[in-house]
Structures are given as structure tokens and as C-alpha cells.
Amino acid sequence: MMDGVGSFGAGRTGTTIDPISFAKQPQTILRALAWIFSLVVFASIVNEGYVNIGSERLYCIFNKNADACNYGVFVGLVGLLACSFFMLLDYKFSSISSVKDRKKAVMLEIGFSGFWAFLYFVSFCFLANQWSRTTSDELPLNQGADAARAAIAFSFFSIITWAGLTVRAVQKYLLGTDMTLFTSEHLDGAAPTQPCPSNSPGGGGTTESTETYQNPPFTENNAAPTYQVPIY
Image 1 (cartoon, rainbow, N blue to C red):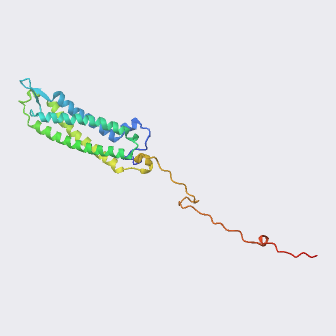
Image 2: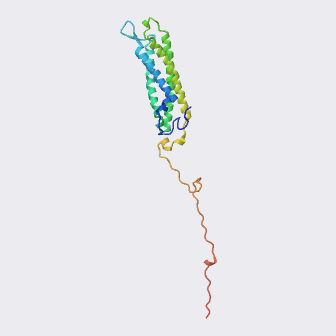
Image 3: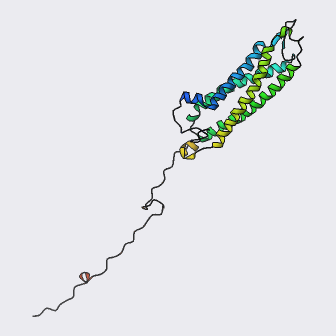
């Protein structure tokens, strides 16, 4: 289960990142596996994906179809670079203070991971189809067969890892954000607004209270003195 505290599965801004805890996260493990699988697909085709059969020209081991090799190299290389980028983004995600930027990062991860899972599905089907049409005459001494099988197998494994990364990204998106952890400065870049103090004792209203004044009642002491006629 993901930690639902914070924004999109991450904690407060400025929290300390523990490298060991980060390495143990399921998303980090899936990302590392996707990186390794992409490296195998890319390296297998680049190193042993082309053979020289009786001429100086190199042919793709997948039924001499250059498009198959080019597609496998492209998917593997871009997947390798993308894994490195998203690994760094995962590590720095908690330091992103803006909720809007976090949302954009998660949506980017959802879109790319889902799209690359689909491209690896196409790669698996394409390479497997072309390999099934490759004859022994095209590969003397079974040259490059292990590399071809490795590229096909790890293309299939990459489908699983990228699909898993897509699911994890969707879970992060569904967690949304806990708005209580962020001020308006984090949301729109404006300075936080302080509420006006209330004059009422309970602090529940903003209406200024007025005092009523009453004049003191007239008393006998305040009455005008009476005039007395002097006696001679």
C-alpha cells in the first residue's frame, strides 16, 4: 500500500529521503527491473543483432528485416533513458513543493509508462514473428540466435514491468492531494493570506461589536439648588 499522507503519495515538502527505504519501494524495484530489461533488449540487438552472410553488408538476424532490429533498438534505448529519468524524478518527488507540478509529473508517468508498455507489446509480437520466419540458411551456425531469443524474452518481461509502473502511477494519481499540507504559496505562488483577527470572544464572526452607552440617571444631588430668601 502506498502512503496516503501528503500529495500524490509523497510526504511533506522538505522531508528527509532515506535511500534504503527508497530502494525498497515496489516502484523503485519495478523501475530497476525495467531498466535492466531495456538494457538487455538494446544490447542484444546492437551487439549480435546483425550478421554478415557472404558479403560486406550486415543483415538483421530477424528475417533480414532491418525494421525489426531498428525498432528493438529504439524501444530499448528510449526505455533505458526513460527509466533513468523517472528514477531520478521518483527520488526528487518529495522535494517538489507545488501540487500542480506533482500532478503533472504523475500524469506524465502514467502516459509514458502505459504507452511504452504498449510499444514493448508491439516489439515482442514483431520480433517473435520475424524470428519465426528466419530460416537456418539465413543464420549459419545459428549465429545470433541467443541474442534474438534474449531480445524477444526481455521484450515480454518489459511489458509486465511497464504495465506495473503504469498501475503504480495510477494509484499515486488516485491518492490525489492532502491540501492541508500546503499553503496558498505552494498552490499558486502567492504569499499566504493571514486571516483578520476577530473582535468577538469566540472568534466565530467578523462583525465588530459596538458598545452601548447610557447616561447616568439624574439624582437629587445633580438638581439645581433652590433659592432661599435671607431673613433680616
